[in-house]
Amino acid sequence: MPITGRRSRKISEENGFVLVTGRANPQLAKHIARILKKDLHEPVTSFADGEIRVKIPPNLRRRHVFIIQSTNTPVNDHLMELIFMIDAAKRSSAKEVT
Image 1 (cartoon, rainbow, N blue to C red):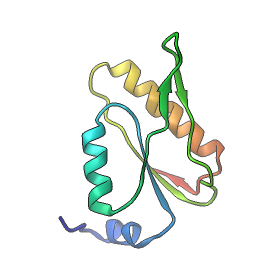
Image 2 (cartoon, rainbow, N blue to C red):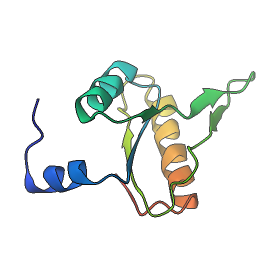
Image 3 (cartoon, rainbow, N blue to C red):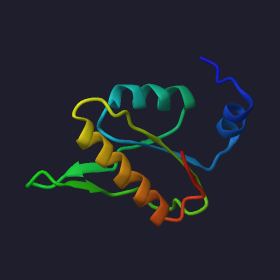
């Protein structure tokens, strides 16, 4: 499946982008990673008490981070995962978070 569009073409040609996914739709994220031929990072886990833990991949400094996360049910859990992943990427000095 070819990637189309000027912005998509530019991003797909960059070597410095990282794919990160939450737990909302792992099949979609794996499919996207396979098409782009990129590694997929799955940083979200849960503590024993159910709290969310996000351990972002190292070396995000000056890299473009793409977060793949839908907000299907349970909406609150998936939205909180997304917010935590965005925060973790920004704190790791990512160049851009999409």
